[in-house]
Length: 349
Ligand code: NCD
Ligand code: ZN
Image (cartoon, rainbow, N blue to C red; front, side):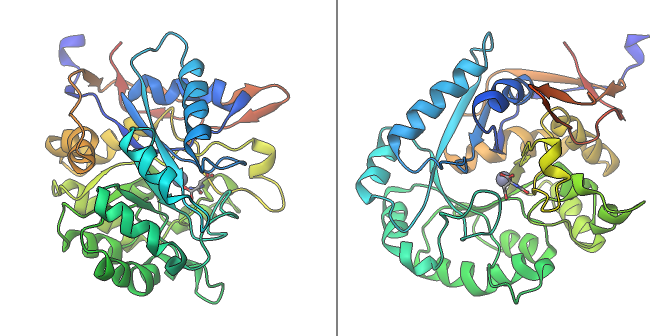
């Protein structure tokens, strides 16, 4: 029987956008990222954000401790930028490999962004340093002006903020995180791939904004940037299946307690670590583009970040895999993306 199973072996992937949280949540969720990915960019938006080297070193240690017997996994740490970020700390953190990059959260743009930047010009002095030392800038690319329609915030960010920024700092390496629109896709495709890249999540590839309102409101599909129209979903699917080198895997796995997802002011974020890689495989398969799976998952990211490509491999088998229904954490639960559903692909163990 097993001879008939469709199989694909690729270089072990990395996830270039992950939220692992801290404490009890970290201890329960990190294993899912560690199971599929060799390295992961760890987002710094904790309740107390990772704004300096000291916090980053101790957070990294807590992450490694949470991985228990998985000693292969490498967390790649990111500095949370604020107007008060110390230039010295930023330089030192990058040269000593404590940080692989720094993240721009526009103020109140998403979860734990209240310390984020109100006006980009207030951190131009930091960006100048980053351009000089070749430190990548990761961006949550949405405008924060409440008068801008939520569905237009990414496209407007490109026009109003990113284009002027790139004009001022043409050699700054930028990753536009979790891109969701055709505007972002074409802007990145037309740019020089040494300086600008984008990450794409499985949920933005699989879903569009209609899915949030099927059979009532679906709080579990609320994430930021918000799911967009179908034409944008198609643009994302088309660009990854073209084999573009400008885009790579960033799942944006973002666990929240169930009670906070369904609260009156529900939290944004989708916990997809148990299924993310399997979802990407399904999308590439549906797009008849499995030949480009490896570059998206395992090559374009390290090439952009100037890191070695992993030596290990992972084998994916076309065999049904059921996603777990929930994770218990004390008296709380976290419900994963596609909980209880059967996916077409699994990993060979
Ligand atoms: C993320 C989170 O919960 O930390 N939420 C989300 O909806 N994606 C933050 C982020 O990446 O915007
Ligand atoms: Zn995120």
